[in-house]
Amino acid sequence: MKRQKEKSTVSFGKRLAEMRKKRGLTQQHLCELVGVHVTQLRNYEGDRSQPTLDVIRKLALALDVTADELVFDAAERMPLVTDKELIKQWEKVEELPEEDRQALKVLVEGLLMRRQISRLQPTA
Image 1: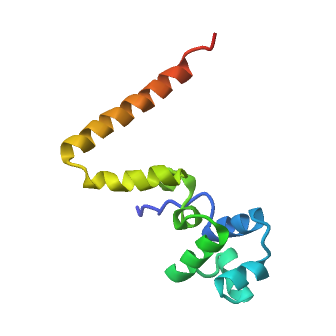
Image 2 (image 1 turned 90 degrees about the vertical axis):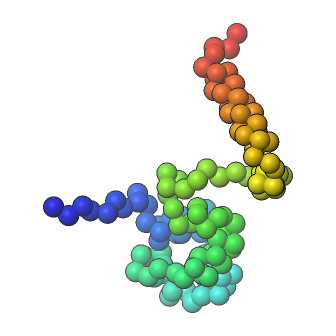
Image 3 (image 1 turned 180 degrees about the vertical axis):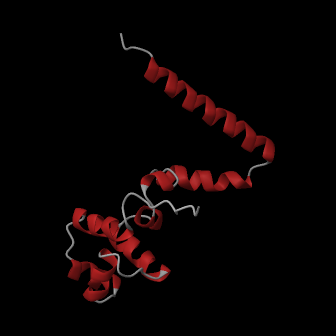
């Protein structure tokens, strides 16, 4: 028996249309921002065609989302970090010696555990 490939809960086209509408953009306006013909955008939104990687990049920039948000369902992608300062700091972690990276992991795990415990405690 063949195994069927799991489908995401929301198609790319539907997700694209939802993001466009959420930002108050018409198809025509999004096309102007991205540089594609409105017929092509309708094909993307109708799941009749898939955009190239370059078009996905332009769509993500125009919609102010990540390419991951555009392509993948929430359950399929990594958690989104929006704190830009934290992202910049985190990118520099790779420069630290292994011992310091391990200490940082322990520290972050402790903070997350403390937060989880505080959620479980009733407020007085």
